[in-house]
Image: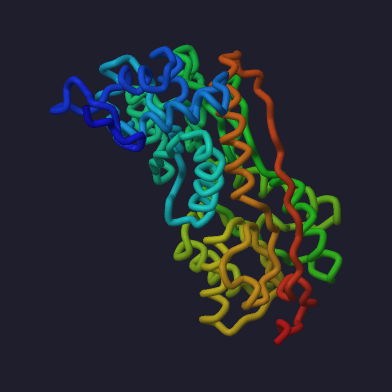
Length: 352
């Protein structure tokens, strides 16, 4: 009798079909339920058992890549859903990188969907991802109320909100210290002699934009600056609208000597307008961005990759414990990075 090589996969009774999870469990010497937990990255499985199951799956050529097959067998998918705003914003790619970095070692996969800041589309995407039985949802929401997402939680799908906290729903969230960050930045401009400080923000309906405007209001009011409201421009969601808002401000008879840009895309639009008209007011933008250091742009910085990692960790913990959400809020720090543009005094040129 010819002996079988130890490295060769065992003979399978149904060689014409794809290997099954039951065969993986048998080869690993564990129950079907344990094999399912190990394959899907669930907690409460020892590293030794998980490694045995994954080795058996690899030996048999078992691929966990058919969601329809998983659902048919009653096995949850191994996907985490990330619902973001406008993918043209680099913030979201950095956020996704952090989520993916955290879930990959747990044999979980990431699926990303973009709402383009459309609340109706967001609801449709969440419904679709729930039907696909994602393990958890991480959401950057454009919805004003989240009360109708309660049934999603009741189905056992944790929802973690990122960047924008939920309203009318108890759910965990990971947000930035927006208000304090902008207040400190505007105080920095005030300390450098500016009073006419323009503010250009994103959609006014977004809680992040509202919080950043509140930080601006706090600083201007505390400094006793009057008539600052005429220097506020909102709903500049992209670089083109931000450019137009900047041009509108800079042609005023008493144009601002400093500008605060509400996010990275707004900052790009502001820079475009300033280059067009040859003006150099002091400038601070929220969010760091590529080449900001080269251009000498002072920014309110933060770490979106770390934000994604923490959001993923919160989501995975919720999957593992099956506990009801407590509405915990993780507030990520922000800090001012001085590069020259925010340190210009009224009438002074940018460094370099």
